[in-house]
Every structure is written in structure tokens, then in C-alpha cells.
Length: 108
Image (cartoon, rainbow, N blue to C red):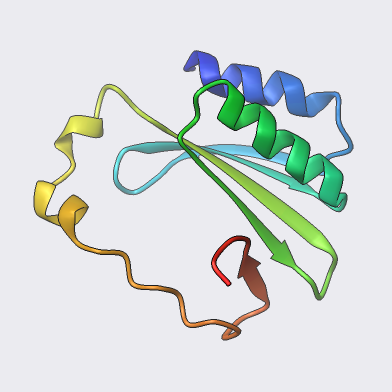
């Protein structure tokens, strides 16, 4: 396991969390997903992950059940270079707002 992922997991275990999942993304990303009901915990994890050099950190909130999901995304050095350049260079389409119960922070 990559050191950033270990550090995030160790840090989160001391906080008020409900669940931690780790998995590989479909384009060679390594993902740590942490679930909590405490907004301050979600913000603390976000700040910690960015402070140790994790470039992609996203907090999603489900207002219907009062839950926050923090996604910390890092590169898998073994497969990351296999990504297709033309896919990486395409612009990201904004998610149509309010189509589902999940809101991505910072996208409003």
C-alpha cells in the first residue's frame, strides 16, 4: 500500500468515522473512501490529506441521511501511465446540479 493511503487511514481511525474503504478506480487511481456523519471530521480529513500531498480530495454530502463521504485519490504508480492521453485532455462536464441526493462540495 502506498504511504499516503496508510497515513490517511491511520489518521482517520482516531476520528469519528463510520467506515473506510480502499479500492482501485477504473483509470488506475487508488481511492480511500471515508464515511462520517460529522462535518468537522470530514473537513479535518480533507485538510490532512491535502497537507500530505494528496492532490485530489473530494467531500460529498448526502443531506437526506446526514452523511459525508471523503474521497482521497492517489496515483497507482504501476498502472497510472497506462491512462489514455486523449481521455485525460478532455474537459470535465459539470454534473447537473440537484439531480440526485449527493452534492459535491465546491461545485455549487
